[in-house]
Image 1 (tube, rainbow, N blue to C red):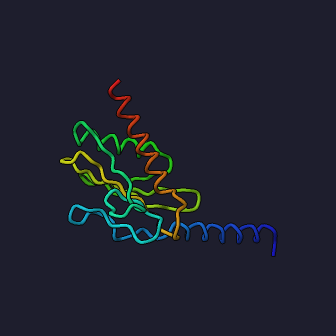
Image 2: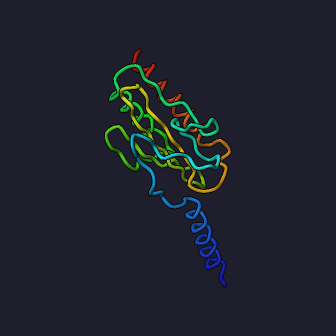
Image 3: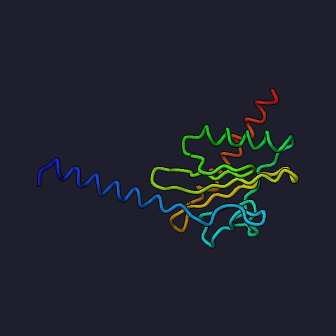
Length: 153
């Protein structure tokens, strides 16, 4: 086998392995009865609507109107290199977060009455995410808050 053919074969195998790490896009995401999909028992998911402490994360809280807060969130997400908006409906965003090898699913649900944006992020594959979903949402919270502070200035 020639060196060139071996290189093509190796690249094909590596590409297939990387594609497998992305996993299939879940079909159970979205809003049902005002709630985001619950987290599985595994520690690779966080949600502001989770009842248990291991999966619970604080929602995004805003003081001004819900529409500007949600628009600011969308702008924040669009500026991130690891994020792609997959679905957008009034008061709901579904995104994919990409790392080098994996794809995670994120959701954001506006609750205008409570002045909250509920958040959820879950890994498609594996059991543990080593805290990646939580740290990513906290980073988004920080960026979103900085945008609010800058808009007041």
